[in-house]
Image (cartoon, rainbow, N blue to C red; front, side, top):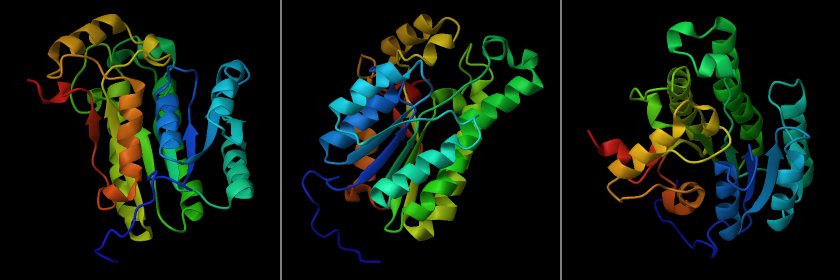
Length: 263
């Protein structure tokens, strides 16, 4: 492998193909990632959960010039494979994958870990964690020239966050999977990063109990004195997808205004 960086196109992701999974609306972290990738020159494919989400996502995809905007419910057999087949037929390759989906049944999410049912725990792990492993398995053959993969975590993966409940162990598992995938895929030039944003007002976060208190606390404790937004997360991922970050893999990147360094 060459030690020289060589010329980097401007914009730095010009010609790259990015699949962003989990866009729900204009407030989604996934949308922030898609917008940042597009600003740096990448071509996009987006997914949305179901027909209810479709009218919120299709205009966003059109605004970004995305040739692919596809339904994806990872719990529905065949939908994941159909997305990657569409990517293969349209582009023949893939350079960037973003996994920005998570789920736990409400009764299991809002109760303590001791009260989480086995079925709820299993669904949370399958949708929020193992789906990323399945995506990586399908994406890797399309990344013949290397690539980068991202999964969205949270500080509750490593520290106890009140009311985060079952999602703490789930996100810890997601971060561990990212590290092991980084190890397995590294020889193929594929880099894998768990991204840990600070609390954001997204549709998924609204299911957490006392979420407004979590937002207020994060803003008061952040060294930069304010919350991050979806564009902050998006541009952090975009940087990691560029050649400028070619030797970085496996690390959890905190995009939280420094909240995680506070005692």
